[in-house]
Image 1 (tube, rainbow, N blue to C red):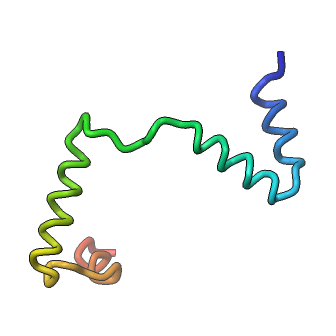
Image 2 (image 1 turned 90 degrees about the horizontal axis):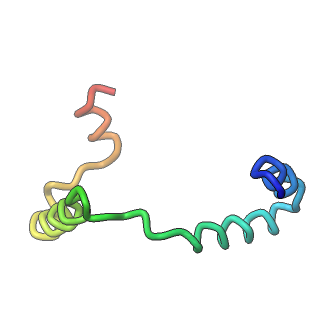
Length: 70
């Protein structure tokens, strides 16, 4: 049986276009990552609707960094 390490080693020897195709195929075979088990999707949709209703709530990445003290 081929090990994951062996597969990885062989995959890394492929040309970049073939590695990208393989990566896309592998990612496409996975279940969706977003789950609503922790109400994260609901919260994201709530925040999106909040921004749609009041665009002044938006902030740039620089504003976020400043707010976080970075």
